[in-house]
Length: 475
Ligand code: ADP
Image (cartoon, rainbow, N blue to C red; front, side, top):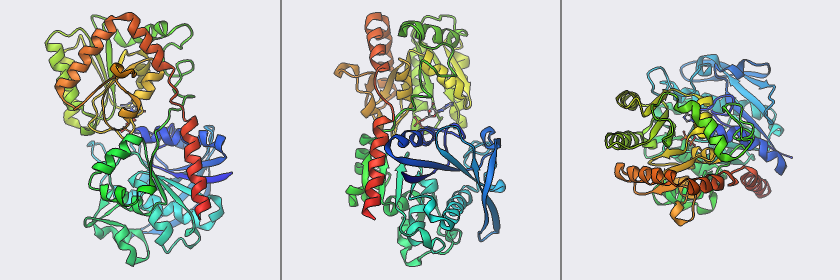
C-alpha cells in the first residue's frame, strides 16, 4: 500500500472550521479501498478529541529567530479509519479556536504557527523517511512544504519525496513579508524566486509552483482560476498539465438520513415523513410553522454573500413574503450584528443561531426545505451536497463547484441556480422556490431525485489514488 501523509490544519471530527475539515476527515477512509494508506497530521489544539489517549513518538525543537521552541509529535488512538498524528507546541497551537482570536480576526502569530507546523513535520519525517511515500498538503498553511522538500537543506532524506497539493480556497494566500525569511531555516537561497509572489513570500503561489501535482476542488473552479485566479492565473496557465479539478465528495457514513447521530428523526418511511419530523422542532419559534423553511449555514464572510442575503430577506419579508428563515453562522462582526437585527425585526419569520454548531447544522440540513448559497465564490461547496443528501433543495449563485453540482431545474437539474449575483436575482430565486413549494407533487419528485444523487467519495478517492501512483512512477 502507498503511504501518504495528509498535512492539514483541519480534520473532522478533531477540528473543523469549514469544508477542508470535512475533506481531510473523509478522504483518507475512502483511499483505503484504492490501496492507499493515508495518515493525517494536525496541530494539537485545545479541543476535546486531543485530550484523548496519545503516545509521544518524537520530540525535538526548532530555532526561530525570536527564540527556540520545542515540540512533540503525538500519535492518537484513532477509531475513524486512518492513523492520526498531532504536532504539539503549547504556546503556538494549544488554543480552542483554530484560526481566530477573540476579536474575530486571525491570530497575530499566524505566520509563526504555519511555518513552525510545517518545519516540525519535516524534521520528524526526515528522521524516518520510509514512514511515508508521499505528502498531500492542504491550502496555504502547508504551502511551503513542496519547496522545503526540494530545496530545504535540513531535510536531505526527503529530496525525492513527491508532493501533492489541494487548493480548497484560493482567496487565502498566506502572504508574508520577506523579513520572515529567517523563519524558514536554511534553504537553497538562489531558489528564492519560488517563494516569492509580487514582493512577498506567498504560501499558495509557492505550492502551485513547487508541488508535483495540484488539484482544485471542482472542475468549474479550475476553469475560473485559469481565467481569473486572484492574480495567480499566470501559474495556472503556465503549467496546464499540473492542475486538475476534482470534485469533493461527501462522507456518507456521517451525512446519512438513516443514521446521522445529530438529527431528530431518521428516515424510516418516505421522504415526506422524514422532512416533516425534522422540520417541526426548527419552526417552533415561528408563528406560521407550515411555511417553506429556508436555511443558510456558513462563515459570515464577504465570500459567502451574507450581505446580499440580509438585503434579500429584509426586502422579501417587508413585502409580506410567506416564508421562514433559519440562519447559522458567525464571523464578520458587522454582518453578525446585521443578522441579529434582522432576526429581531422579523422575529416571527427569522431565527438566528450565532456561532459554530455542528449538531444544529445537521438538523438544518435535514429539516429545511431549501438551502441558500449566495456565495460570491465557492471553490466546491459542500453544504449543497449535504443538503441534497437530506432532500433539501439548494438555491445557489452559479459559481465554482455550485455550477458542477446544482444545475437549475429548468434545464433538468436539481435546484435553483441564478447568475449574476444580486439581491434582485436572489429574491427572484426565492420567489420561484416558494411557488415550487406550493406544487407539492413537483416538490416531492425533486426531493426524491436529489436524495438519490451519488455524491460519495467512492469515485473521487479512486482518482486521487491514481494521481498519487502516477507521481510515484514518475519519480
Ligand atoms: P467553506 O469551507 O468555504 O467554509 P464549505 O461549503 O466548503 O465552505 O464547507 C462548509 C462546512 O462548514 C460544512 O460542513 C458546513 O456545514 C460547515 N459549517 C459552516 N459554518 C458552520 C457553523 N456555523 N456551524 C456548523 N457548521 C458549519
